Amino acid sequence: MSRLVVVSNRTADLRKAAAGGLAVAVKESLQQTGGMWFGWSGKIRDAAPESDSETSVRLQTIGNIQLATLDLNQQDYDSYYLGYANDVLWPVFHYRLDLANFDVRFAAGYRRVNQLFARKLLPLLRPDDIIWVHDYHLIPLAAELRAMGCGNRIGFFLHVPMPPPLIMAAIPEHEWLMRSLFAYDLAGFQSEADVTHFTHYVESEAGADALPGAQLRAFNRTLRVGAYPIGIDVDEFAALAQDREGVEMFDRMRQEYSRRRLLLGVDRLDYSKGLPQRVHAFRELLANYPENRNSATLIQIASPSREDVGAYDDLRREMDSLCGAINGDFGELDWMPVRYIHRNVARKRLPGLYRASRVALVTPLRDGMNLVAKEFIAAQDPGDPGVLVLSRFAGAAEQLKEALLVNPYDTHGTAHVIQRALTMSIEERISRHTALMGRIRQFDVHWWSSSFLRDLLAAERSDDREPVPGHSADRAS
Ligand code: GDG
Image (cartoon, rainbow, N blue to C red):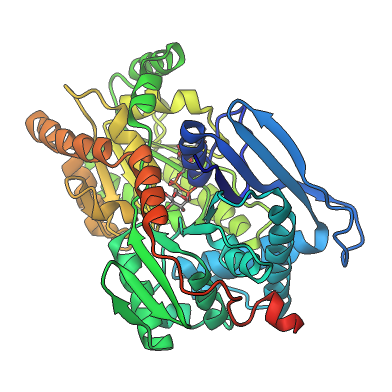
């Protein structure tokens, strides 16, 4: 049987619980199949910035997974990771052109690190390995590998949203980036909306033809595309809720908040997650529906993320001030409306916390999928489940229609829907939860990886293995 080789910007620490959607899902799917996980170690090495002569790949085997990691130098970290990935692709793919910084040095660093990854990965590959590349950090990786002669099957999955063509076109290198995707055999997206955006982009910008079998033909190549909404390991997560720590957490929260109704948000502290808008909506709930005063409490966990990026610092200050103001304006000696925790919470505690909450607020401004929505559903007591309030701009909204969908920009409307969630009858809660649970069980993380890999194996190979124009080999010639 072929070996699976997963490539992502960073590998996860396999001995610790992962925080962050990609790490959680990739780890769970790779543990099922075994294989190799290749990526950045997370470390920055001191070295002459121009050479990668000392970069060596570290190999480590843990269970059925071989981890292959390399360090980055400071210049590459600054331009590839902080620059192009976090200051160009992340904001643009989340529709935030206002936050993007199109510094040309970033694009050069991005290309350099993708070439570095390709050079270091190639000698580790066996001819029948199946390669699965993850996310926006590594869009040109297959094109670089092909330019070095790699003929393996290579699939790509985008965890973040694919923006509409005119937003994509704001990236100065958009043509190069999107053309690179045609070096893959399969490009997977989170939702049908993402597939549509990509298809419209290549049709309008590159005159692509849509072929039968979910294929696109452009740049002399054929690429299969599809939506593979990522899921969670439902059984594992539900079991975690029954673990000692899960039960203890649940009991503690239920005791502490016995007289109060708990609302919960769990997110990385990221501007795509709509945290200030959520706090504004909660404030409006207290203002417009006074029965919630002294009664509803919002616990917002915002785990630290990308603290080296400026926009995240601004967000942190904004959240500190919004939460302080709401507690100052509405709090009582024995009630604080918002408990804002800017720390990472142990994964084992999350299920108990989800289960003790009456309402989950999952209200990103834009999100590829959002796994918290699915974790919340999985952790509920089916006989007395909580209600999911979900942004229509999360990829998850395409699947989770029985959640209460909101527009997070509409503060008034969101507050109204939260009130509806808080007052929903048990019959309606159970009926919605049963439907949602069925859906996340059917489309769980194992479905996600097996359907992606099945389609990657079945994808018709592009007729040529030639380098995609614009990548190493033809630049060198
Ligand atoms: C990207 C896309 C897509 C969060 N805080 C803590 C913690 N978490 C865990 C959650 C969940 C994961 O991190 C977050 O997953 P999301 O899906 O919400 O978001 P991103 O990190 O932005 O991930 C996203 C995902 O990739 C997968 O494709 O869904 O759209 O943006 O598992 O539970 N875990 C712990 N402590 C925390 O404080 N232990």
